Amino acid sequence: MYTTYRTGHRRFSPANHIGTRKYGHKPGSTKQEEKKASTRRKPHGFLNTRLLPTAPDLYVEKNEDIQINVTTKENLDFLYRSAMKYAQLLEVELPYHPRDKASTREKISLLYNALDSIVSHHVNLELVNDKLQFCIYYFHDWPDYTLFFMPIDFTEKLHGEIKKIALEFIRRFIKHHRMLDITDTLYYEMSEGYMDCIEFDDLDEEERKELIKKDRLFMSYDKGRIHKKLSRMHSRAFCRNLEEHIRNCEPSTEQEKMLLELIGEGMSLISENSPHIMNYDYDYASDKGRDFDPPPLESQILLAYALMDEVTKDVENCFSCECQETYNQTPVSFTYITPETEELFRPGDYPERFSRWFGKFVRHVTHNL
Image (cartoon, rainbow, N blue to C red):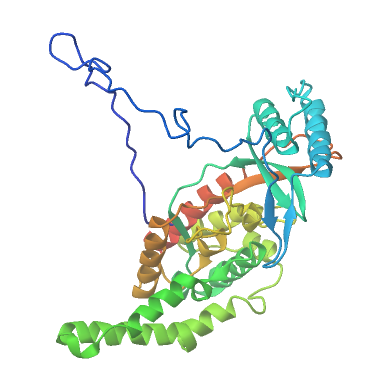
């Protein structure tokens, strides 16, 4: 795992410039000048616009040329029945008491506040298939600004049965979690594009050698040896009956024994009943109009060839620069509630177990193999 960026925390200081009678200035102690009335002989005559007694409807874009009104009575009724159903599951009363003359938009806002007050998790109001729905979500404990790269270069130092087991396990792991290659990300394209912007004639001899070396590495990622190794991880199996091979394998060193134990532990993360880590990809502050989108999970959890080569470092730097313009997206459990919801939202601890195991596995194969 690569921790690339972390923000700081600041606090506002208390106001300490308080005037005193002896030394300071007391607000309002100066004499106010008399102001003339406006031409209509009314103070503040420009404030004559009639204020609407109700909040206007809210329209959202469905397509480029179509807008729909989401503050309808039908949506309000659906949200109310959804909130009432969830309050019944919680066995509490929904504190929703709108005024009779309140607008539909105001009633939706009050209903949201009522549901948010009885739910211990976070609540969003989202548009799903042209209908407003309540979404309850929970942030998992996850290292911020961290890239999860699964390397395969260490397998080149393994031999025999343990090598087949390690490769087959990684193949199944990336397939189960729908992990992309490092070359499939925008950050790889940004890194490669930066290479084309460098003026070769402006470099000294050492810098030219480094640039040529990095260019050859990119070529290997694009269509050379590394490309073939990454592509091979998405094809046929390296061995059949992986569980049986793990039970019968006899490692020759302590490092291989530890690797086999970590693989056995990781098998629980890719069982038939295990979730996919990409299913926790939920952007709680999604907005179509923003300039920068946060990196999704599929761009943070990737298959890589190595952790320490120049290409990986460049991808890491691009990720770090991107995060400075937005926020870091981490795994989130979420559910949409409806009037037919039958059980309470209970997030598990799968992302936490995934993160702990991934860290142990990558540290072991990096430092010991």
